[in-house]
Length: 97
Image 1: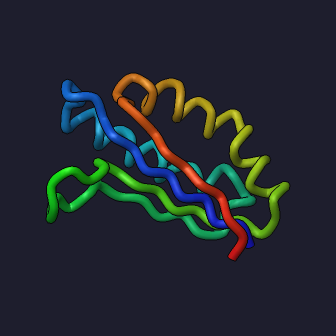
Image 2: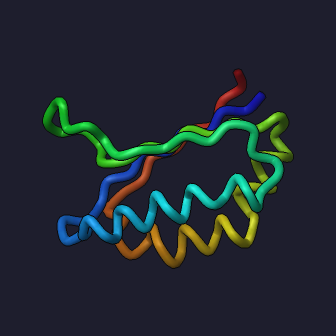
């Protein structure tokens, strides 16, 4: 199993509506990308200062399944159309579970 973890920081001018749009767009991906086995995401709770703004954890059976997700046109559209306009930075990692 491959676990994919992404942590985002949003731009200072990211609106609550644009952040909600990210969650809505990401939420639609499991229905259109069959290689996704587990898909969770959410905004940071703000319990401690200096943390990232948003995180996503996804799991895939194989490396090929992860790569098909990474290159999937619907996933790419979410990144380009919804995430990129408010993204200040991103850190991600993929590891074997």
